[in-house]
Length: 200
Image: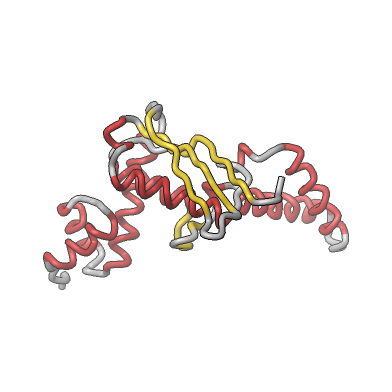
């Protein structure tokens, strides 16, 4: 027996995800009325649509900013989209603010793992190598351990891989894919800078 989908449930799901009413209704029907499952389904389809948009030119956008209440941490982030129209929307501006807040809080080093400074990763590898060497495991096992630990460090330091501070069930990268699906445009974090008083 399929669950009865009320207009209230559809409206609530639309408010949560920003997706159209018909898509929300379809997701709720697929999820047998389970709101959490429906959100997950919409995130998956939204992410798939965002992947298809990823190649499109994103040269519009804005600079988001955040300064912590005590004035000791400040962030600027360049968030790009395809049109000036989308850049002026409340959703896009809210995303830029959320990203600025996240960067202030989580202190990423680079936008993605591929952008991490090579010298930093070389140092991290040396530290991990030394730790793993003491494990007494065979060399082939140690190599896998080093690769796994290095990948984990890269994820912790790159913005797109970090769990989003306002909802740690999704990564910042997932948050941007959902926003891209909602806004109907390619959305890209171009760069950011984080200042902390007294820290170079």
